[in-house]
Amino acid sequence: MIPVERHQQILALVQEKGVVSIAELTERLGVSHMTIRRDLQKLEEQDAVMLVSGGVRSAERLASEPSHLDKTSMFSQEKQAIGAAAARHIPLNSCIYLDAGTTTLALARALEVRDDLLVVTNDFVIANFLIENSQCRMVHTGGSLLRDNRSCVGDAAAQALRGLSVDIAFISASCWGARGIFTPDEEKITVKRAASEVSRKRVLLADSSKYNKIATFLALPLNRFDGVITDPRLSESARHELNALNIEITLA
Image 1: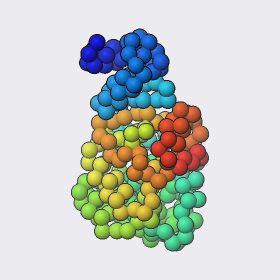
Image 2: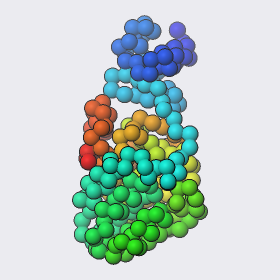
Image 3: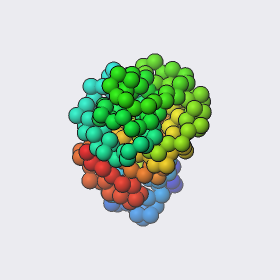
Image 4: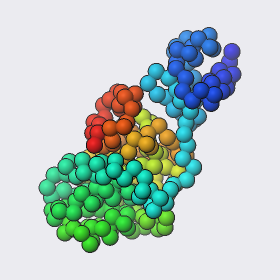
């Protein structure tokens, strides 16, 4: 059986069952464990499947970004806990970047009592909250407006970031997995990459509901992050995958 035929059979099985173990695939297709591993790696590179501990699952694709209003009501307790945990990681007198998003907004709410920080953001809701409720100094990147996302993106926003030196970048994600963070909006990529380039430390803030989902564009590989703050609902298999990448995981 040639690789293309195996790939078609693997995809058919995954579509039928949702999750298939490597052991079952080797038995069904009559090939070695190593061959199946190579097949699955190829299919994952094509974003056709997602590797999980001991097997493979169908790739759940995010076609478009929910609006800021829609995201506000999603997993709000988890986001609040993630934001509070992230706030405890910020030393005095730091310069931090808060990426656009409702999880980073939860972090901004946890900084209400701080007056020692310089906060850089591309998010208008975060900026407005800090203007009204904190004594932090603040820089907004400016850039092209994403109206539904209440944020700025594109080359102008990225260029503003490249002129700064940031201690910690707290970066959000539409979806994430062992490969990295993904977005359905290509304009967001340059901003996230610029933030990662100018920061001494990079922390991903993302709840577990977004794990093992993908979108069209890979914004950053996961090995670009020093840590991930998520919630305790993250599966054991996901924790093993992240530990294998030597990424510090905080469960808020």
